[in-house]
Image (cartoon, rainbow, N blue to C red; front, side, top):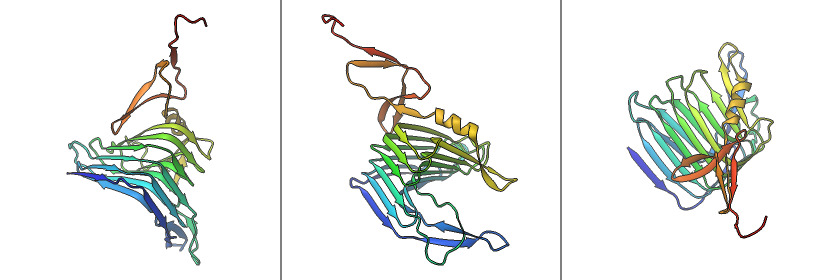
Length: 272
């Protein structure tokens, strides 16, 4: 099945606190959660196709805020794969993380996110394609990917921000429930400005320790895979660039460690 949604106007949302606490062990310790205020949510399953076009997305909340949330839940083992395609303008999210009076406990899943991609149990080459025609600004995290499925999950997420990713926390956060998952993130941006030393933070769940552990090697590897958009005028041409195409738009890019050759067209009659 296929769904096409065209929203010509901007999406603006102001959310309330929406916090609550729950016991998480026999000792009676509590954790505090927030109900995320979300600008756009798109989910599908079993070879479904969803196409969404919208203007700017602005989400503010006294608790936490999410600009775009996507989820591919279930897929056929041998199907064609599910697909979510989203094209939007600027994304701005701001969450104040105000806790309602009387609640106690540690914060859990309490970050505001510009884009939050949830990859569950897809098995057949699912795709999430997001094009942001502008900037992505977040009071905490920028692009987050939650890989909940095991090695059979093969979701490919392609995210292009044709502007600046600006965050107070990590620009990119990836969580792997299982170390052997095969889902991937291909990120392209014009510029990244984050509040952490690493542009990409990757954490894996350690079952023995029952906690999420920072993966320094994978974080470095994912950071080196980021494609940066290159802009130039008509008198200059480049070789060595990588072409990135998402939702009908193409971008010349290169990675931080790659070298390019610049060709400048000059007038032969002039002396230089």
